[in-house]
Image (tube, rainbow, N blue to C red; front, side):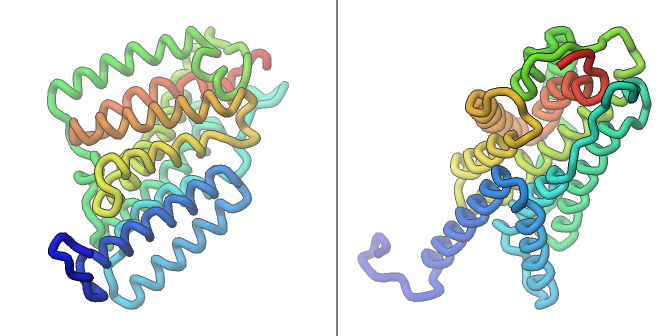
Length: 282
C-alpha cells in the first residue's frame, strides 16, 4: 500500500520503481558473479549485449540498470583474456608500447567504447559520469595526489603490488620504464573509474539511490580483484578495494568529477606495471 492506504494499480509509478529496483539488483548480482567466476565473464557480456541490441532494434530506450552494468561487463570480459607477463629473457620494461601497457589500453578502449555507445543511444552524457573539467581546487589536489602516491607506490614496491601478487622486487633503475608504466596505469584507471565510479554508480542512482548505487559499484569493484592473477590473500584485497571504491564514489559525487579518483588510481597502479614487465624476483 501507499501512504493513502490504497493498493497501487499495475503499472503505477510505485510498481515501476519496484520493478526497476529489482532489475538493478539482479543485474548487479549477475556482474558480481561474473567478477568472481572468470569463465562466466564472456557469456554475461554477450547476454547483455544481446539484450541491448534487442532493445535498440525495437526503438526503445535503454533501461538505466542495463546501461549501468554493461561497461563493467565488457571490461570483465576483456579481463578474462590472459594478461601478458614478461618471462626470463624477455625484456619489455622500457618498451613504449609493451604488451602489458597495450593490453590495458585495449581494455580501456573496450570500456570507453561501451560508454560512448550508450551515451549516443541517449542514456546520458559523459559529463554526467564525471568526465568533465574539475574545479581548480580539485585539479590541484588531483595533481598533488598523483605526485604523492606514485613515488610511494614505486619505492614501497610490495606496499601496493604486494597486496595483489605477494612479495616481489622491482627494477626501478630504468627511468624510461615510466613511459609504458604511465600508459598502463592511466589506461587501467580510466577504464575502471569510468565503468565503476562513472556508469555503474551514476546510472544505478534512479533505482538504488545514492548510497545503494555507490555500495553496489564498490562491491563489484572489490570482487573483480580476485582470481588466478592475484597471489596474495583475497579477503584483505577485496575489503581494501571495496573501501577504496566506495570512497572514490563519494569523492566523484561530491566533486562532480572523476579527476581525483583517476589521479590516485593511476598513481597506485604504477608499481603493478613493473610487476608485469620489470619484475626482478617473485
